[in-house]
Amino acid sequence: MLLTILSASAAFQASAAERPFCSDCAATRAFFRKHCDYVLAHKNNHKVIFIGGYYGRTLVAGYKIFHDRRYLDAAVAYADKLLALQSPRGYWGTGYHDIYLADTGSALGLFIALYNDVGKDRRQKYVDAVTKYVTAIEKDGLINPSGALGTGWRATADGTITGPYRDEYTISSALTGGEIFTWMYYRTGNTHYRDVAYRALRWIFSTMRQDGKIPYVLAGEGASPAKAGDPKNDQELWQRWPYDTSAYVGEGLLSFALYAKSPKQVSELETDVRPHIEWLLRTQNADGTWAVKGSGDQKRSPGVVDLLIWYYTSVKRDPRIAEAVRKFDAFLLVPGQARTFGLLSADPDNTGAGTTNEDVATSLAGRAIADILRPGIDSNWQAK
Image (cartoon, rainbow, N blue to C red):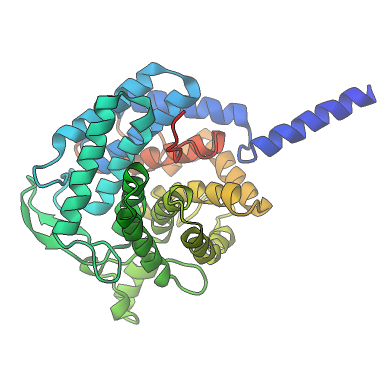
C-alpha cells in the first residue's frame, strides 16, 4: 500500500512538474475548448485585423490541442482574407482609420502560427506578403535612427494614406520590429532582418526605468520621454498602458530570444528583461490579474502570461513565476470573474463594427490560455 501511495505521489509530482502553469489542467482544457468554440461560432471574421489575427491564432492553438479541423480551416480562411487585404504598397488597413505597424504585427502573427500547417503555395504567399511589408517599411523610412520603428501612416476612414506617422512607438517596435523582422530572418537567413529586430528591442529596453517598468512611448498621442515631468504626458507614458506594453513587448522579445540564433544578443536581452520580470511579479494583483480592474490596460494584459512562461521555461525556473501564472489561470476558471475580465462576453454579432474591450480581452487571452496548457504552443515556429 505504501509503495502504491508513493508511486501515485511521484506520478502527481511529475505531472505537476511537466505542467506547472495550470491550477486545474482539466478545467483549463475545458475552458479553452469553450473559448475556441466561441471564437469559431462568433468571432472568426473580425474587421479589426489585430483582433482577428489573435482570434485566428487562438484557433490554430485549438487545432493543435484538440485536433479539430474546423479551427484550422477558419484560421486559414482569415489568413486568406488578410492576403487579399494587403495594399499594393505593402500595408494593411487596421480596420479603423490610421495604419498601425503595431496592429499589423499582431495580425501577421497568424501567418507565422499557420505556416507549418498549410501547403507549400500558402507558405510562399505568407512569405511574399511579409517580405513586401517589411520592404515597404524600410523604403518608406519608418525605421528611426534609434532603432525604434515608426507608428505607421495617417489615413482616412476608408484607408486612404494621408502621410507618414514616423514617431517612435514601443508597440510597433515590439510586434513588427521584434517579431515580424525576426520571422523574416528565421525564414530567409538574411541577418539584416535580425539586426533590425535586435535594434528595435534594445531601444525598447533603453527606455525602461530602473524599477523595471517599460513606458508606452508614442509622442503623437502625448506620451513622450522628451516631455518627462509634464503630468498629462507622464500619465500617458507610464500609467495608462503599462501591462498592455509589457504583453506586446514580451511577444516581440520571446520571438527574438527563441529564433534569432544569436546567443550573445539573446543573452543581452535576457539580462535587459530581468528587472521587468521582477516588476511583473511584484505588481500582480491579489486576484491573479494585472493592471487596474476593468481598465483597457487590463483587457490587453493577458500576454504577460506568455512572457512569464517563456522566461520560466527558457531562462530561469523561478517558482514565483509558475505560481503567478497559476493564480491567473485560477482567476479565469471562475465564470463570473472571466466574464468581468471580458472573456466570451463581447456581443456575438460584433464581428467588425469596431473594437471593444471585450473583443480585445477574449482575442488576447486565447494565446495565454493555450500556453498555460501547452507552454510555447503559440510561439512554436518549428516544423513538426
